[in-house]
Structures are given as structure tokens and as C-alpha cells.
Image (cartoon, rainbow over all chains, first blue to last red; front, side, top):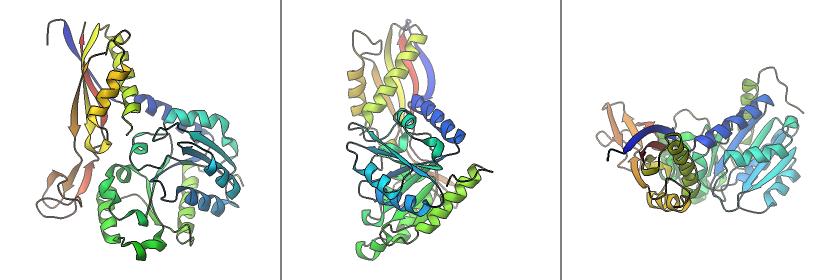
Length: 230
Length: 116
């Protein structure tokens, strides 16, 4: 180091601006008594089917709005509105592999939060990048399907370690795809011993009811004295 | 994969800090990247260079120094902290399953070296 140079200690998260924007989103959700769920999964894991199951299952009990993050297009938005979502907004990330908090802030201006109990945020299909970006959700949910293999916690530990809830989808396929459940659970427990875990099949509807009950319980414990809007 | 977006945040942070310190130039940038953050150092460096224009940015030409931090587990039986060597997160000594103590997902700016 020369005399004219000096070192400045900073020790700050690189994504601090994202974290700040996420905090504003979180405040907006809390103020409106909306439980926001950031759904992270690989392409083809069944995110949209899972969202549709959730909307249909809660239809008579709660209003579910959806934010669809996708590289391009609006097919998923149409599907969730047809399933009965109270409102839906599409975020096209123009090629970006994940949603960021400020993209969500913009979409929240268009979404009818006032009339929603839950907001399901479908992140871009990817088990890696979305994990680093806090959106301001109260629940980070990782959805993985049996067809993807039992090694997903070993290959993508961060998303399993950081999620609040883990969903194993397509359990009806387990007999056909050599999915070793004990290996899956063993590695998952090492990464995240406390996260609630649900096994579901969106095709047979098995296990979906337990997930729906969990969502409603979480909503009522998060926002005491508040009735669902339906 | 998401290095471009992270580089944008990094450049903004570095330029803000350099301005606050009234620095003429940023000589080096020290960052910590967790091994599980899936951020590729060379790719991040490339984007950092692209985003720091020689005419406009005091951070242009700064050396990006990257420290990689691993994922850590703890074995309650051996009372040992370990990084993963096997593909099932087990303790290298007793082969029992450990507990995660650090997810190895750090993404932080540690310090910058500047010319004042």
C-alpha cells in the first residue's frame, strides 16, 4: 500500500439495496394483513399446478392473489385466473433468472392487495438464483418434485437451508422414478431440521389438504383477530 | 448465472463508498462469496469491468479480490466443525449426520482499498 492509499472497512451485504426494498414490501404485506409466499422451484416441478391446487382448495375460505414471475409470456397468469385467483399480475423478467424485490414493488402497485389474504409469488423456474433475493415474503417455500431425483438437497443446499417450508410434489411418481425417500429426508434434515415438510400430488390431490390447513393456521397466527376476506 | 445482477449491486455499493471517502480511485475491492452462493468469480469480475466505465467510474480498473467461504456443519458426537467432503453431509470422522451451522451463502463487500 502506498502512502496515498487507504483501506475502508465496509462489511455489508452485496444485496443490501434489494434487502431494503424487500423490507418495504414486507411492511406492505403486514399492513394489509396479507401472507406472501415466495415459491421457488425448478422448471417443471409443478409450480403452477401447485398454485392452482392452493387457489381451488382455498376458494371458499380465502382470497388468493398471484404474482407470476417468468422470463416471458402470460400463459400462467391466464391459468391462475381461470382457477379462481382474486387477482393476478405477471412480471416478465426479460431474461433475468430470478425475481428481485424492486420488481415485486412495481407489481404490487397493480395488484389488489386490499382484497387478498394470500399472495402466491411464483418465482422464475430455478433452484439457484432466486434463493439469494429476499422479496419481502413472510414464507419462502421450496417445491421439489420426486421426478427430479432425491439428490436435490445435496446439489442445491442453499434453497433447502433457507426455506421456511419444503414441499415434495408428484409423490404419485415415487414408485416409478427410484426416489430414495430416506436419503432425501436425511440430507434435508441436516440442512433444515425445523422446516415443515409436505408431501403432495397435484394430480391425485393427495396431501394438499394438510398444506392448506397449514397456510390457514399460519395466516391466523401471523394476523391475530383478522378474519379471512371471503 | 445471476452474476450480472450482483455486479450491479456491487458497483453501486463500491462507488457510493468511494464517493463518501472522497477517493480518487478504487484500487481493490475485497468481497466474500459463499461457495453455495453459486456466484462465479471470473464472471462477476467480467461484469464488474463492464459496469465501471473508465471515464465515469472511480472503480474502473479496480482489482476484485474474492474470498470463498464454505458451507460448515457441526458433528455433535465428535464436537467437530467440518466442511462437506461426502455427498451426504456426514461427519468425516464418525460418518454421522451433522447439523448445518453456516449455509455458505455469504455475499458481502468486506472492504475497499482507495487512493485519496
